[in-house]
Amino acid sequence: QVQLVESGGGLVQPGGSLRLSCEASGFRFGSYYMNWYRMPPGKEREFVAGISSDGGDTNYAVSVKGRFTISRDNAKNTVYLQMSSLKPADTAVYYCNVRYWATNYWGQGTQVTVSS
Image (cartoon, rainbow, N blue to C red; front, side, top):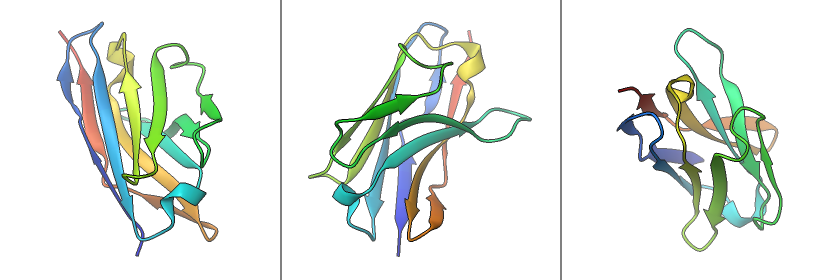
């Protein structure tokens, strides 16, 4: 079955950086568009970034463009989210996502807290 496992979250000061990872299994990873979403405290889940199956096309939310970079390693079945110049507003649970056979799959999420 499809499994997505995120890691790399933590507490970071404003202006700092973190790299999130999502290891996927249960489907042909290299054939699917992958996404990162986040859920800030008290808010709904929102799109952060997406990447095409071969990594050649990326898409970002306006709020993170220029600060976050999505990438993937198809040999490792892993998608990454490099986050820089972090702000308190980036505090959220970050989720990896794939739409597989018309069903959205999510990982368990990883907490990112930006605070001094």
